[in-house]
Length: 125
Image 1 (tube, rainbow, N blue to C red):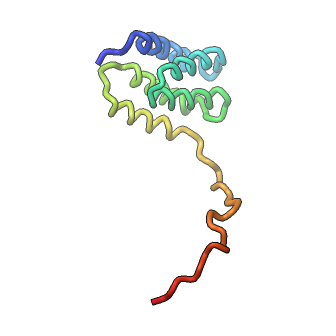
Image 2 (image 1 turned 180 degrees about the horizontal axis):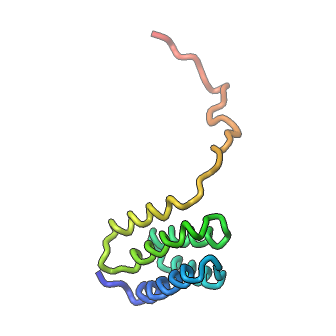
Image 3 (image 1 turned 180 degrees about the vertical axis):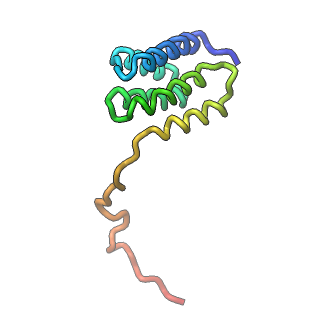
C-alpha cells in the first residue's frame, strides 16, 4: 500500500522532529514539540494520535522524557515505515498508551443511577 502524498509529507516531517527531541534531551524545545504534535495530528491514524497525546504530556512534564522518548522514537519509526502493517502499528499504539497516566482514584459516585423510590420488592418463589 502506497502512502498518499500528504500522508507521505507528514511522515517525512515526523522522523526528523522526534530525532531532534531525542538528541536535544533533556532540553525539550516547545517549538519542536508543537511541530511534531501538529504533524502527528495531521496524520490522524490511531498510532499517530496516541503518539501526539504522549508527546504533549512529555512537553508539559507530566510524563518523564527519559522514559518516553525512546518508546516514542520507536513508535514514530513504526508509524512511518511503509513495510509494516496495521498489526505492528496497533502493537506500537498499545505500548505508547501504557505511558499515559492513569487516574489516581476512582471517580466518586455523585448520585445513584436508579432512585431508591423506583425499586419494588419482587415476589419470592
